[in-house]
Length: 214
Image 1 (cartoon, rainbow, N blue to C red):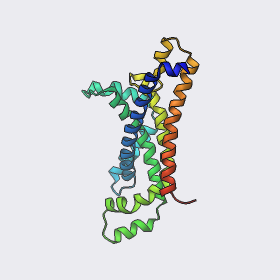
Image 2: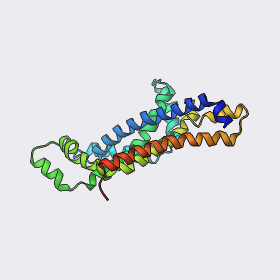
Image 3: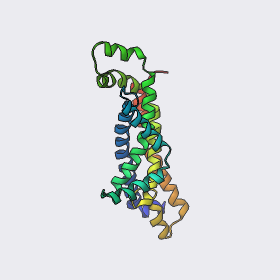
Image 4: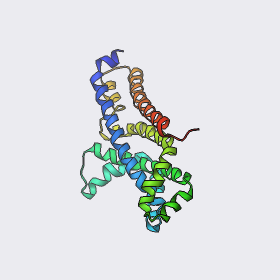
């Protein structure tokens, strides 16, 4: 326990950094993922192509490589932001590709007749998608989205290698101070467990309230 008690503030700062990365990257991933899912089912060919390329590129790019591209590449083009913002962009964009596919799979579960009925009433594509299709699709995609955001929380550990304060990065300081590396990682694991179990509990509540009964 002395590892935790002697360095409670360090662990707290790292945990807070991980929570911030997870929350902001999740919001970005959800927003971009839903938009890309809409692009992939849009009647406009150019939007479908853009959405498809977005998903294919990001899903098949290692996250570490994406971090290098964002944190080291964007400043070369004059885009200078705090490293934490760059980390949120990398995590959020990467995860948005998986959110997109989860949402698209949910859209595909909605009967075609629902969209046809909406169009027969004179609703536009955006109205049909936003008012008819997505609310029904949302009920079926709660579990996969929850799993994706849990993976995002764990992926945030990569940010520590790029001077971003997060939970895993605390081991460097504690190792230099001579603390047991085993117990250092035990308490780091407990911190990640707290974050992931919180996300899991939140999505369990959402699933019980709005999910499709099995």
